[in-house]
Amino acid sequence: MQRDARCYLWDALKAAEAVQAFMRGKTYETFIEDDLLRSAVERQLQIIGEALSQLAKVDPQIAGGVAELPRIIAFRNILVHGYAAIDYDTVWRLIVDKLPELQTNLTMLLRAADPAPDPSGG
Image 1 (cartoon, rainbow, N blue to C red):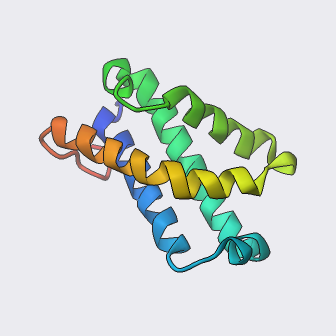
Image 2 (tube, rainbow, N blue to C red):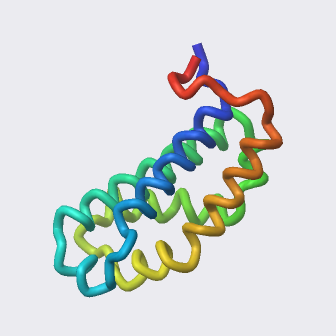
């Protein structure tokens, strides 16, 4: 059985919130020096990209409401397949400049897709 499209929005939003929680009070220097923090952030960014990639397959109309969707998916692919060449300056700027906008965008899409999905995927 195919997952409800809203579950992918939910997964992406929860991953974005996790990144924000991980980064709260952290500096760029802390981010660069902390392998565990960077790994956790990268994993959540991968989840965002994969969830939105799946959303695009399941419901292109809803996915069309995600700003910069192709770039988000492409960045996920870089994190997964180009792991040896990740530019952490770019990751930092994405977290600071783009992630809050994405969270707002995903929240609005979830509100528009009422009723709320079952986070278990059912």
